[in-house]
Image (tube, rainbow, N blue to C red; front, side, top):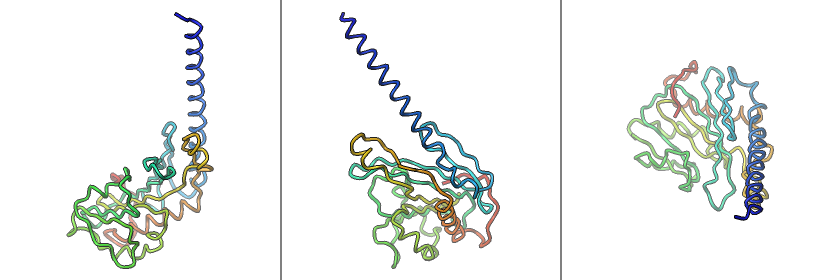
Length: 230
């Protein structure tokens, strides 16, 4: 047995493991402060670390229970990976059906349940044409006309999905795209300066609250409740 070759291979493996651990540590540290810029706008904010993934925020805002979960989407072969934000508002809704509005559907949206809903609905006039609307029960779904007030959000190219169900409402919004150079050359999914600022967070959470108020059982806000999210 060539012990010199075995030694070289062993040293190479040790170096690879060390490099991997170093890169994972850097990645974890770079993502751990994702919510630092917006925590002050929330009440009872709790940030849960998620290893090398982005952390998850649970908080209250204007009495509503809010959860923000960043997810990395690298499923599309011809597009740069995206960093999406799943924003949940957990509260009772005045409808028993699940309604999903998916903008610019491509069939790779692993995070969306819209494709599993039974009934496809017509797109109202004035809405974007590249949109998929489905629900689980048309007779018990909210009218799309009540969402017309969300015109700006529906036409925002970063807005990806609205979901309304008995447990509350959900919004999916693009926070960032991967850096082209890092991904094209090294296949590293790196989001430069990826931190959620207070202005962006307030805009998104206010939009989420506006969606909820459109479908709430009563027009007045309710206190946050510990119900399951969508």
